[in-house]
Image 1: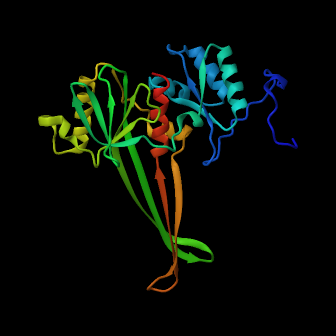
Image 2: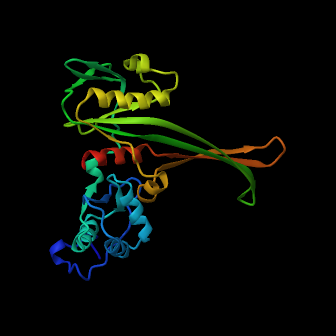
Image 3: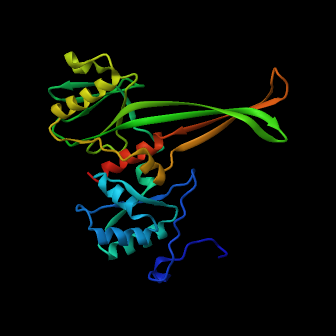
Length: 288
């Protein structure tokens, strides 16, 4: 109560301890619980899990239905995560605890400019430095496909009695296909973005649309690398947002005087799922 330090685990009576489901703040690292079993649990087990986690049963079923490593919950405290994992394990629902310090999502994968497929290996070209990194054709290669989504909402209105009236919102959204690639011993991996990538490695299969070229590139990598594993069944945005909220920033445009008189205030809200997708991408690497 006074020092703010958590109790040592051996001092806690686990059967009576209450789990704090508090999530970390945006700037804090947290701990995700991920189902680590290979077989989908039965209906009774799912209902018991939902009761322990205090969430709707359908939420657990949806997570398990994605067939990929997906977080069930996201907690601020490691002791709480360990306590929750132990209670789930008692009913046969094994979970792994994955800390943000392991995923390092604030450090993005190395962006690629091109890929060369040669007889002695696959060569990845760094977008910024132009240096090439070689990977053996026979080594395991993880491919995670998804999208980076950035949404901007601009709000403006008149200021009346310190409140905003006649507010108007303008929303714009940008959705870009990405491919993350992880050679077996690479922690941070590589990232291919639909913009700025040289698709000439596709040869005659290269088209005029970047989205189509991204799909062709995935097939090209899988055909050239014998042990490539593809994960393209990412959970829905709403499903991930509920556990790992996307980054949100707000910028004030200040106050200006309208040409028709009175004061107007403008602000912009940006929502970006880059860190969220990087977390999901890195998570797959630890469960393949």
